[in-house]
Image (cartoon, rainbow, N blue to C red; front, top):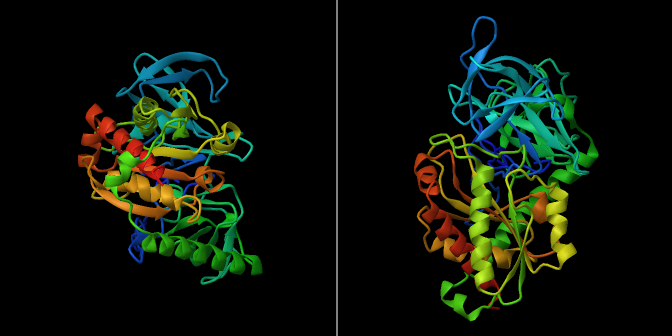
Length: 437
């Protein structure tokens, strides 16, 4: 969230995270085209983008924040390779004194030093800081968000523009203090709706609204062409999904996973926690791995072979390496597992995201069927997902959103092991159903 996120992800989905909803624009969580969502929740893939939001600040611009990860390293200076001088635990409250390129200087009664800002939340629950992007070559960069003093876009209102950076933050308003909605990818075509103080309000080709720094937009004939192509792609895929036959769970037992090689991708990892639950503080990267491990066990018990893109929360493989693993090992299918977030606390349920109607739709339909059968939370069906890990994958691929961490009911159910077992069994059943053909 994507969040996007995703909230990080509505979403998600970076360098490959899609969009969500914004104040003043229509909700874009599920823009239905013939009964199928044409815009997916952003999974925040390829880039983690958490941004400074308004909060309770002291007169000297310091503010209080809470740690939202099990163990957070405190360093002597801002930077990943600097000396570790201590650690903080989940729930610890610190005073934030300074910020430098996404790193926050914090202190409490026992410790003073620098931490990665995206593991902190302000006392009002908003993100404390930081933008983290990963390039196509896998190089990670931590940087401050563009300021509202950035130069304005040369694209007039109503004109088309292309995004010129790998992952451009989409916010709910014209400034870096507004809440993160997601990000737009390089060469995404957008319609510019308005300008304000170096920011442009845009609508993406897939129907989402939000504000981006205007300096990352470029107009011209290429933008017009790209916009038409991208919009038609979303419509075509969604129409194909709406017209495709439903999978029947009764056919699960006729399928066999014996000898099939499945790549399971627990999203996020390492210094990219994904979205964080608003009620219980659950961390997405940990949930992704937990569900993935149960999926692995179910698949292996049915005779399948499984390759994992990561097996611990300290690992963060690049998006490219996740997508390329399928072809390098000769996989039969690829499943990326995520949890979601949205601005509205009422948004809930699961969703199966796919990119190609010819390559991915059959797998998406097969996994949707047992999820719809009931795992404790509602199922939102299928959605077109423009995510790198499935877009650039050589085998049938899906990206699963397994519930909203911004919804108290969803997060409460997700917190229990029973949910992960039920969700994992449904995913395994869906894969077995896919191979019943």
